[in-house]
Image 1 (spheres, rainbow, N blue to C red):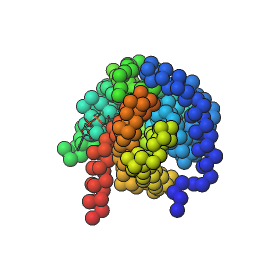
Image 2 (tube, helix red, strand yellow; image 1 turned 90 degrees about the vertical axis):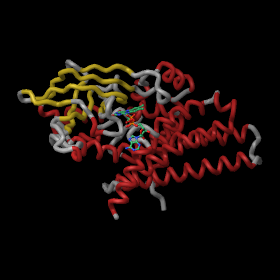
Image 3 (cartoon, helix red, strand yellow; image 1 turned 120 degrees about the vertical axis):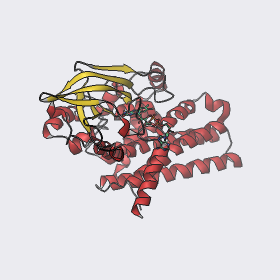
Image 4 (tube, rainbow, N blue to C red; image 1 turned 60 degrees about the vertical axis):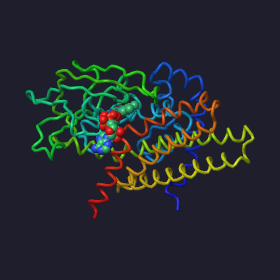
Length: 367
Ligand SMILES: Cc1cc2nc3c(=O)[nH]c(=O)nc-3n(C[C@H](O)[C@H](O)[C@H](O)COP(=O)(O)OP(=O)(O)OC[C@H]3O[C@@H](n4cnc5c(N)ncnc54)[C@H](O)[C@@H]3O)c2cc1C
């Protein structure tokens, strides 16, 4: 049984060709060292048709193939519409026209701002405040580690709009709004020196008395937490796919190392290769299974969290093992960067522990 539609081979081939052609060693090094957002690559990837949200399987396959060659460039190229699913699912026609359309046309970039200095895994702990003033609102607060932070034209921002009704209901009273980066009171400062994914833009955002018009509220006031969780059910599949691409890329490099160094008959290397290939295959099955459910409009958060956690762990495991067995050659090769990039996959969009909590809580609830 194939979990992925069969007609994607051509697109997969094109995505691989694109990544091998555009993600040259020189560009990978340049954007990594300068910690610069690769706008030229994002534009080319868009023009080549890879950022097509009407073809979700196609986007997934492109993400896998891009990350197999270089995760930082691949993710930047394909995450220009980051967070747009909240507008697609919950936004008004006005918001879709004003904010979604230009992103889908490749003219604008979006970001999704939830994390704060006091609230990472614990989304309900956010402190940003959205207060009524006249016909609109005023936003105050800060967000950290925001992807596309220095390049996005607008952000989907979660803020507290009313106090929690009780300690058990801390997730109530949060609202999502669209905030433009050109508005007075908005500030973005690039966060440099990340372990990996240095070609992605990451910023510390500040909102000081930012005036937000009423029509920029996404969906219903007070329902923001639910919109964020719904978004995670989608975005975690994309993250699992990024991790899968990294793991496959490291496996490719390790296989090449064995062949180039005449180690085909050495049992230690054979065992390591078999171990890596088995885990990559398992991560691929979990990821495609979760995606299959989502794309049939029946997302299963347990399967999604399994895929995200296992694929992230696999990326770290495979890059670690490949480095162990390639020694000096490995630590001075592209594997070194893959190892650092892989670690991020275990953190963003929900750490491994958070994914395990989702899995176990939902399984126990079913009983
Ligand atoms: C490069 C990068 C880009 C990012 N981009 C974005 C973005 O675009 N938008 C955005 O909103 N956020 C973004 N994030 C933030 C990311 O989602 C958070 O880092 C993540 O949710 C974890 O939060 P934290 O770092 O505060 O860690 P914490 O939540 O403080 O966790 C620290 C440790 O404690 C563990 N832990 C936490 N709670 C529990 C628990 N209940 N039980 C057991 N263990 C627990 C965690 O697993 C982890 O090991 C980004 C992060 C990075 C690194």
